[in-house]
Image 1 (cartoon, rainbow, N blue to C red):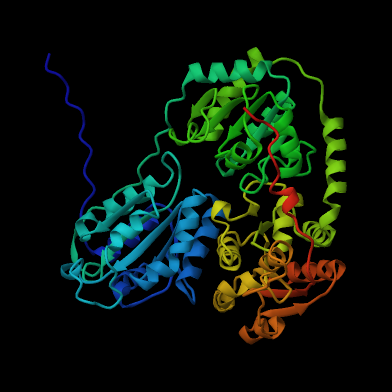
Image 2: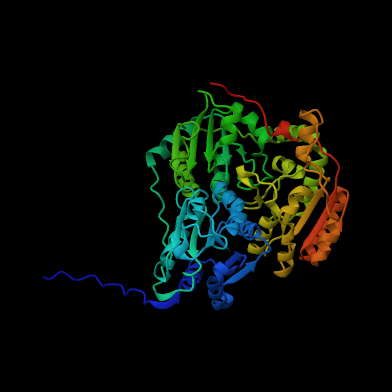
Length: 554
């Protein structure tokens, strides 16, 4: 009998589009319906394509390229979904580069669309407007995936490939550039469909080995990083099964509900690291514990990471489990049912240790008083956006995050000034929950101009600016470590209340934690762009609770 032929699927019909229109249509097909952007002549045809897309595609235009990129970053961190921003080449790219670098460090799915000079002039050094030598090479050092769009025929496929690249392996940003005389070119376009994600095969032998190791360990410590944000149920169950505290300093906050006595930050985490016979690292580099607190032969480490190269980078673990945290941990939980030893409850112990830690943290009482009132007024699902400021350092030690993706902190770049614009993106992407941005007077003015963006697009972000007239951390270090030789740390500030009001935003000034609580309650209820200034004096150093000596040595 003749073999039956498989039915052939009809290829999608091609339609005539411009490169810009193909790009816009592909973004929409992949669920990216918002673009954070600053327009310019190099991208005129792309923006025309955005306009032609109608209400399906929203363009949120900012007052600075760093604002656009940070907004995309904040939206990505708050939702866990890809976001995109658009800037012109040269200075536009460089203005956005700090945010793109931060997205790389935080494994955030941010797609940068970057203009270019005319295609025939690229690399020839003529001195075109915004020309920069080897822009593609610069971009390639900030992301894992980058390419140049050459015309309408390849635009859709390259956009789809860039989006598909962001969650693969170690997640992170991607970038595409396109010449100004290519965006408007027209031709037949076949839109590329979303590329289905392929989950890596989970090594069952490694899962079994990890289950045996953790199952017989007596004192397990779980360390959760940013890669654990989508594995909260699994981490919570493992915490209970193993009676294991969960250490999360910044990126892993909220993976375990911060109200649990098993949810710990650095000071108590260091003590537990010294006592543990096994550590389970989930979606974290384990950089601080391994480099500051040390590793010895008595500590057995299991790593869960999406990047095959990451687990052995600093110290080869006993077992490495490669893949996305949630499915890997589900396999581990299943295997643990067979190997897990019964352990007595550690709840009373952890409650007592948390109480003692709180007493120790009394040394930074002025900061904690503000942290406590912020936590009291921010709803459970509200998003707190960290900054490099005195209250921010304290919050990393003592602010309990109740849910995943509600504590946003800038990772190892720890870049001053990221906060306000990043929080603005988080609030725009999550209009259903209140978002709070905390700032110092030094960092706020990096992107404080984006108050204009908040007003233009009616984004009801609440910002608190703690003002001490200085880069406070720098000044204290100069005073304490450099014989009070103070240099370049004093600030000339505006009246921040009048500054906010000049944009049309609500401005408030309060001086005590209690007054801040009242102001926050009113601001969250009003749902309008708000700035609350809190004048403060010098605050005690938090560093003894952050930079702590080794507890383990080989």
